[in-house]
Length: 386
Image 1 (tube, rainbow, N blue to C red):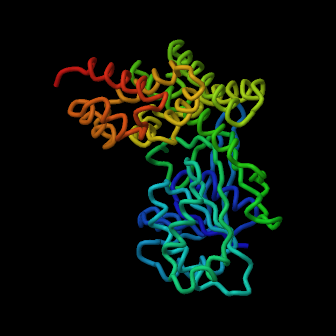
Image 2 (cartoon, rainbow, N blue to C red):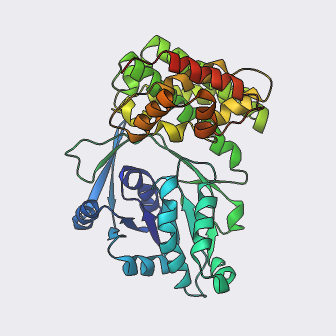
C-alpha cells in the first residue's frame, strides 16, 4: 500500500505520516521546501518523540520524499499509483496541490480502486474545498469520468505539534494525544485501513467539537497569555486569570455545541477538562506567539471564535467570554506575524463596523454584530499611541 502526503512539515511527519506508516503504507512525502525534502530523502528513518507524563519514541521507516516544485512528473506518477492521498499544508495552500492530484487521477488506471483523498487541515470542510479545486483542474470533457477515480472524505484532526528545536533535524516532538476522525459515508463501506483513524457516519459534530474546544481554547490561552507576558502555553494556563478566561470561553462554546448538535453536556464537560489538561503539559514547549499567529484567519467567520460566538448569540444571549477572547486576539500585536501587523493597521485606520464586516464577515442585523462592533471599538480606544 502507498500513501502520498502533501506537507512534509512537523504535522505531516509527526502525525499523519506517522499513522499512515504504522498502518502499513509506504509514505511518499511531497513538499516545496527543497532543503527539507533533500534531508528527508537522505534519511533512513526519523523519530517521533511523544512527550507527556509517559513519553514514547516512535521510529518511522519506509518513506520517500519528492520535491513537488521541481519533480512534478514523478509526483503525478506516485499519485496515479497510490491508495491514499492526504494533506497537511494549510487550507489556503490546497488550491496549489490540487492540480497535481488532478493530473494523478487523469493518469490513474481505470482498473485501479478509487484513490482515497483526505485533507487533514484545521478547517471545516477542507476536503470539500480540495475536491472542488481538483475538479476545477480537470478537463471539462472528461471531468466526470476522471472524478470517479477518487473518493473525497472530510476529516477532523487533533494533535499539538509545537515549533521544533533548531537542531531537531527531521525528528519531531509532539504531545502523546491525537485524534483523526474521518467521515465513513464517502467510502460506501470501502474505507482505507488506517487503525489510527476513527471512521464515523456524521463528522460535523466531531469537527466543530474539536475546532470550538481545542482550537478556541488554545487560541484563547495564547492571546490572554501573550498579554500577560507568558512565553509558552503551559506557562499561560498556569496564570489563574488566563485559565479562567479559557474555561469561561469553552463553557460558551459547549453551550453552542449542545444546542446545535445535541451533544451531551456531561461528555463535553469531561472533554473540556481533558483539553485543558493537555494545554498544561509542561513537557510540550509551545510558544504563545506560534499558537497566536495569523489572527485574521482565526477571526474569520467559520473559525474558532466567530463561529461559536455566532451560534451562541443566535440563542439570544451575549457570548461575553468569547467576546473577551476576541478582544484579546485583536490586541495581539506581534511584529513577526504579517497578519498581526495588518490587523493592527486596520484597527488604527478603519471604522469598527468595517473591521467587523471585513475580518469576521458578520453583517448588520445578526445578533453578534452589535456586540462585535462594541468590542472592536473598545480595543481601538485602548490602543497605545505610536
